[in-house]
Image 1 (cartoon, one colour):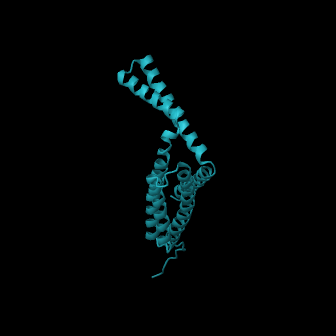
Image 2: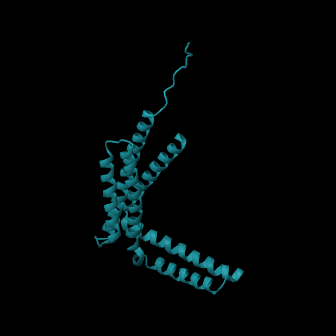
Image 3: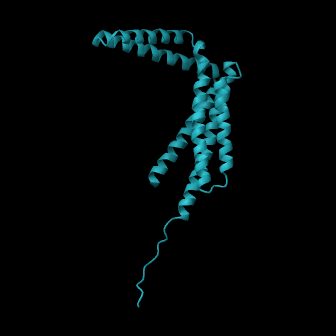
Length: 193
């Protein structure tokens, strides 16, 4: 149990560090990253479309496979050539990621409270702010992609830092609760009657 808990904590910290790094990249190069992400998505769709079409030619999978392959191929080429057309979806995707993280953070804050942490309210507020960042990203209220992408970067850096704080305090609360109920090792003595 202790090893599993240790692995989960390490995974949470690694995820947080990667989130912070991605956020820093988005803050530093918002337009370049958005164009790159769109071009990579376009290239993946082109490859997927080609695989579908190739599968039809080799295995005769069916006319729907060719139609799907052509759709993916054309969509991929369109996205690759005009990445700005799809760039408005990037804030929505990142916003969904932040919302999913905030749901996990709410759960961990509740667990910290359940295990007696005095800082559960702070953890809850951190998760709430993370949720707000997610909603703002989805709504794209800033209107300008470069500003929105920088805001996404800030949100991701915040998400990583808040996740580290939440994991640290949750682990601390669980460890403290486990120590309170740990068995006491004593020597047994026979009692003479």
